Image 1 (tube, each protein chain N blue to C red):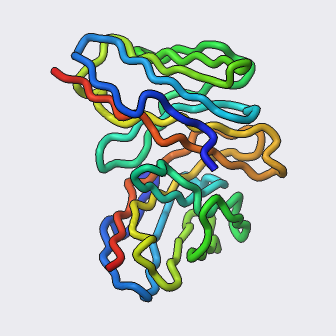
Image 2 (image 1 turned 90 degrees about the horizontal axis):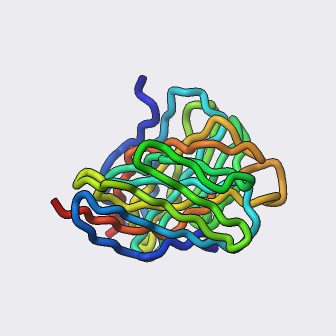
Image 3 (image 1 turned 60 degrees about the vertical axis):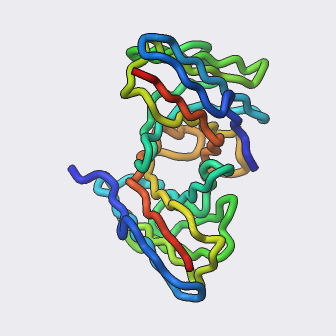
Length: 115
Length: 115
């Protein structure tokens, strides 16, 4: 079952603009992560935000988390053509019923940054 | 540092054949995962393993078998391939699990075509 759901499915912007992607999820979580996937490649971890955090920064990335609305946003500032990729949110559900662990990924947002 | 590798990178097989996809990581991470990625479905977890000789089903395990005799290897076998198993398969590993899940590191993927 899909836990995280990204919005929009696709986003096209010009170089230098900011890009905002959103993720909504259904159940309580321990943390939420954002990953990036370049075409034909594996996913690469970008940033992790824990359920007790509201905002986190990493370089040009800013992630927010609103647990009351069960949503997160990823902001990429001053975008570059090289930021063109798919971006996925992934959630670790709280108390997934045992000591083992699972991440649930959304379907992703395809970001295209035009030079 | 090779990280996490998958082989083969591309595979064409026929319906009914057995296929094994290999995954190897050099970090001695405890957790390893197999995902499949399909258009419209995002990433879906097939199987995961918390340690050598410990495996568990994910969201879509039917038709797949895994083993983990050594910490660094996590092969995925399609016992009798079907066309619906045509997909891109990603292996991932993580140092921690349970309630302390951190980053997952992904391999480059195996593109499998079942004719």
